Length: 293
Length: 293
Image (tube, each protein chain N blue to C red):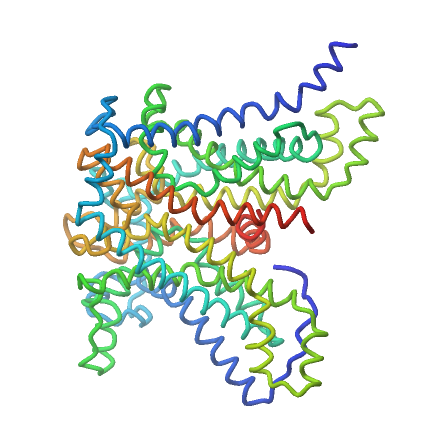
């Protein structure tokens, strides 16, 4: 998360250290267990799962459940597998992340380098909007999307995620640009650089880390969203989380646990990969979204 | 030339204007609209026939709503307390110059990157007596082991707590770890010279210094608890019966499946009031505190 800071100065004898390590490893097992259970059972045939022994490695290894979850499992009425929904999620997430990050960057730029009367009030209103329970907007949002002709469409979902994402993206860029030397901006202004030139040439080139934070945060949140997906998507625009829930909770026929697990891992994979590749930035986004207003 | 510089002066406001409008309409306008609907006799569709506060009195007379509120009280208090204790314990253990910290920390934190739907899918199975933990214990020879909370009306809500703690405690650990790394080693050295034991140093010095982290963790966890929706949908679907119903699931079912939009809107307003009464004082003190520094 951060560079190794000075360790604390408390030291322990060997027995205490052994106990500490044991406790830490037990906790690691606790956090890994559900993922492990899903993974090993997604590689077993269904009969083997029914015999019990969820912690055992498969006696017969099979990737059949994965293939089924991806392309043939029954979701809703069609045996399409999760693939079309995975694609829906990508088509929804990419534009929503890009648009909300661009808006957040511009907002942060104005809120720190071009403050005007009332801009702080606006920021306060924006900040507060990050925390509202989304139940409060479901009914009017459904009506507005209907009026705009976007009900059930991918662009409707993108709009929703952009609207409720710019609070966080603005927060990130504002806090980041606040530490950017304002003198540089003023000097460029005197040299005749325009509003957008200053943004492109001076602030943007040093915004790499915060862009990563914002993109990861938005990607994770939008990919994992369920409430908006369940409320506002149509039959052809259902995102992955909603499809997974439909797959797992469909009451018809045999419960194919191995397929459910493969599907759950497929739904988790994109955010998990992002986390493994750039966990440092993920944590930074979490912390600045939560700790510092 | 003059018009150009005027444009430059207006640009910052023009750039902020769309976000301002979006927040005004999609957040505060929508809150007002939902507030208005909560005062009308809207059922399947919005109606503009005002009926005063009768939706609120109906709401608080519903056993179903009381169930949701008392479940929220149980869920939120256990979730906040367990996450804080576990997070602090993990952070303290991890702060003892642990060589494998770089491996352990991401393991504790990865559930935060997952969708609640995925978490729910994994835990639903793990907690299922027929095939999960109970079955495994029986196979291992512990015949009398019984763990069927998820099927039991009186205990199912604790299953939601278990899964939610698994998902969020690593995040709280990260918050405390950042706090612990900020403690001045000189204070600890001074206490050691005075002959204080490690336990005393933690109890009397370090943990009291974590007060701001406790506050942040409380605010974050409380607002997540009030918003909790996806996890219940994926884990129990609100059942058995209404045993794990929370305000968020109540709002959804009253508004969209039971066609009681007026009552659904009033429950959303109650959720908003709960969150704002926690968040607004917090943000206010954070922003004021930030200026004082």
